[in-house]
Length: 149
Image 1 (cartoon, rainbow, N blue to C red):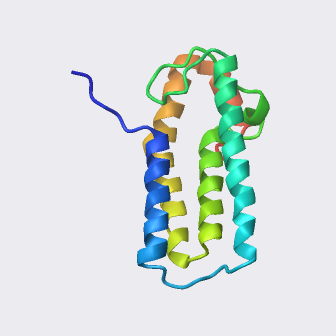
Image 2 (cartoon, rainbow, N blue to C red):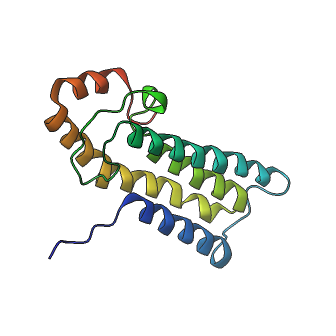
Image 3 (tube, rainbow, N blue to C red):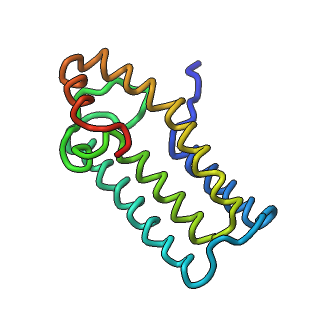
């Protein structure tokens, strides 16, 4: 029987639920209040748009979006010209936007934790797989484009 894997969107959803839970159960202190907290919706929108655009790029290039499957192509255009991981960057922006919208200090704690987990659990293994599968093309891309921004 194949082992079920937990994919990045699940980590994002768990981070979101944790942020909301912490905001209501352990808010610590309110660091961003009305009306400034509304600005978080901009980051939420940008993060969502980045994920849709990057996802469409994988479809356009007919390669997998799943981190545990071997890629058939290296996507280097669009958002991938400025970040090797625009979907993860979009998720971090979305979570930062939620933290700003909620405004409590405790909700901000989750963002760096999510960043760290995605880096350690997914990005490092994805980069290793890409280097093995796509060899020189990936290494040249890696030299040209930063991991996050």
